[in-house]
Image (cartoon, rainbow, N blue to C red):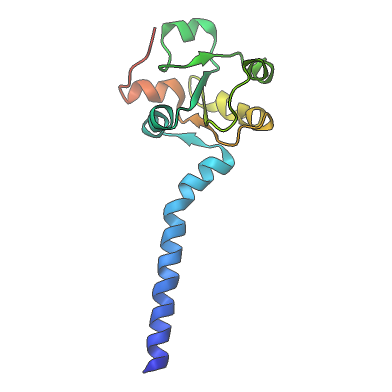
Length: 137
């Protein structure tokens, strides 16, 4: 009976560990691979974690409406622009474009500058609008 109890306990511990990993994996993959944040997650990063928000869209699109607190940067000059700003590298960064694809390509550049937490707004400004979140004009 003792042996069976030990097997049951080991099975429960293994189940607990696997469940914990499964719950943490989406967050970990976002941080490691830089995949997108949902509009809700981006809002949490912006409001609670004081994330920097950089909009990589053309100036005309930026003027039509952008995320609150976002700064427009050209994706071609992204690294140089960020270097000039002398930002705190400990703050997270959210990159934004129209659909999320252009900002996904820029994650590597931002990480090379020493920002450890970099993510994109999954679906871009289009997803932000679809979630009926405010844009600043």
